[in-house]
Amino acid sequence: MATKVSLKSKGKGGKGSKGSDEKSTVQCLKEWSTWAVKKAKVVTHYGFIPLVIIIGMNSDPKPQLYQLLSPV
Amino acid sequence: MAGLVPPGTTTIPADASKAAHTKAEEKTDYMNLPCPIPFEELHREALMSLKPETFEGLRFDFTKGLNQKFSLSHSVFMGPTELPSQSAETIKIPTAHYEFGANFIDPNLMLIGRMLTDGRLNARVKWDLTDNLSVKANAQLTNEPHMSHGMVNFDYKGKDYRSQLQIGNGSLFGASYIQSVTPHLSLAGEIFWTGQHLKSGIGYAARYETDKMVAAGQVASTGMVALSYVQKVSEKVSLASDFMYNYMIGDVTASVGYDYILRQCRLRGKIDSNGCTAAYLEERLNMGLNFILSAEIDHKKKDYKFGFGLTVG
Image 1 (cartoon, chains in turn yellow, blue):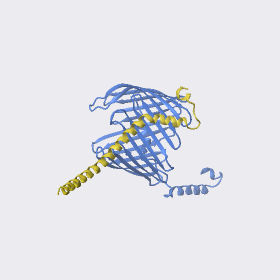
Image 2: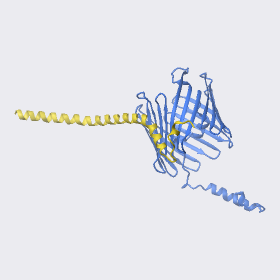
Image 3: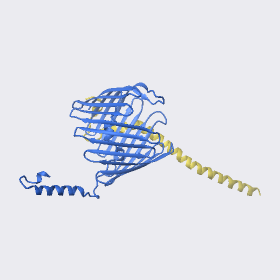
């Protein structure tokens, strides 16, 4: 009798945890996408202009480094 | 056509050649229509004449090209900036900022980035994946939370149509389609949906253009009706007029303007039904040196804006 009861409660406990698992995967996905967008925003904010400069300095004809800073 | 007819012949062959020419014009080839302009450039000619980039204060732009594709730009601006206010009077605070920019312009890839001293970044990317498909992205990023915007556009160009899909932050979705119906007329439609404000809308547009004139009209379910007409009077002069009406709010604006493109300068001016006149002069002082004068006088709001600037490179 005791084992039956314990099995029942285990079953119930198992179902309950599965339900909360499903909820948390959707939540996890939302959290991860928000985290990814936030990180992408920071990366773009700091890295876009250096990216353009790197791409530009490697294009043909290759400009010299001093041309970046001199006003001529 | 006149060159083909040798001089000294009778008038009958000349008439025949003229008739053949008009016959060719009348018989339009509906399978070979030209590709229309992109939907966001529908009112392009009218906006060029009627909405010049007027500013108030001092503006100095220096663009230094490092090679054909890559250039750096330094820009200084000092002047009052208008704050959006609910009351009738305009509130201006004096601002001064320096903007550093890097541009990389390639036939397939265009990257433009501008960084201001207060930490704001304006980034624009245009990437032509194939001849017909291109991706454009536009972002304004700030350090303040929830004040950044970004938008991605996917454009597909067909033989005589263009379609565009737009995705923006704040779950903004838009799509537009423009099709050439005759060699001069193109029709377009667009739909958009915003998640944040839960608004959606649909709009239609038409554009008729010839060598001498362009007429465009646009209607949207948000209540906006916009009509514009531009007439190219000569090589140097074009006149434009614009009519905007919002049937939900009942707000009407009509404006008339001109655009003079002369050898050394470009002068644009307009007058509005809101009692606002504006003028914008770009004078080429020397090779690569441009002097800019801008004026916008709003008699109704008593807001007078005068600006001057210099653009080098």
